[in-house]
Figure 1 (cartoon, rainbow, N blue to C red):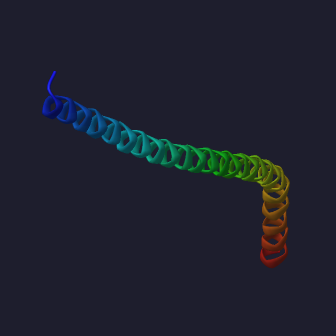
Figure 2: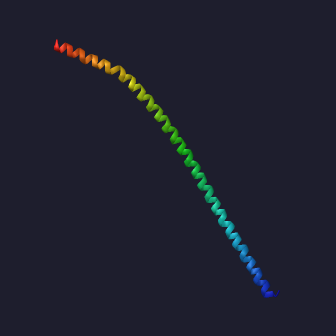
Figure 3: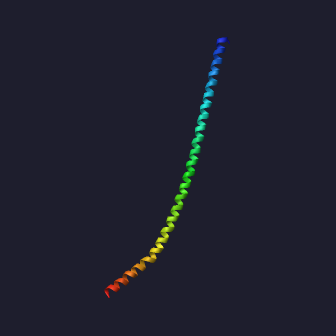
Length: 93
């Protein structure tokens, strides 16, 4: 091999090495970004789970309130009807 060919080959190898270094740097940046995005997804998932838990608790409380309201209604409606009948009897007597 002649000296110019050797220099050209050395230059090509240096360019390849620089290209590989640049590619490794970019891959490192991409990995860093992916880690950040993954951390964000984990954080959002945890938040969504907490919100879901709160929603389930609210639904359970609402269900209990509706059950109590139904029981109260079953007691109050007959009493109100009886009072209306009594007042009507008093008025019409």
